Length: 126
Figure 1 (cartoon, rainbow, N blue to C red):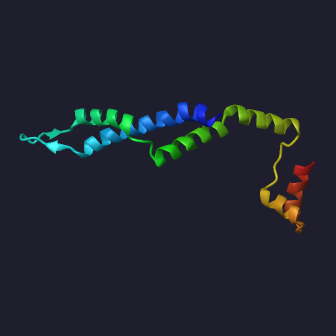
Figure 2 (figure 1 turned 90 degrees about the vertical axis):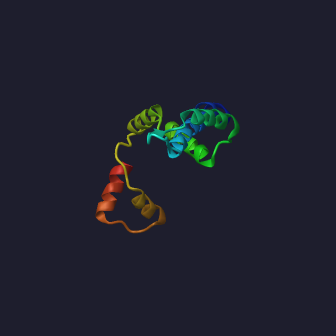
Figure 3 (figure 1 turned 45 degrees about the horizontal axis):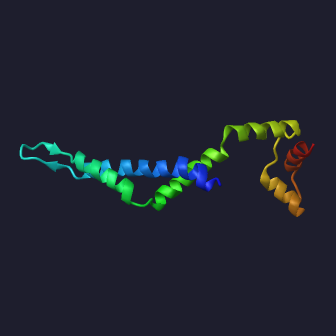
């Protein structure tokens, strides 16, 4: 549902159009020619035609697809409401301190801890 809904309509297709719109003028600026009087000439009309034809006929590139997926995941995961709810949940459960993952791994595997590591774990576990 999410793939066909917000991702495709809000992120993927606009990213593909934006990518095409950026690519065509860049190609036109690479094809600058010099007129008889020595003035540079940029084929902007051809760039516009290529832009329209590419938007209709050219499939989305893998780069565009991955870029849109990255943007969508970034916006979904780092949503402010998720961060606010996470902080509220951690505060209401009393987990206002943290314990590094390597200390938790040492405890899970039954290894010995240094006094500093034991102190970090004890303040986390209380």
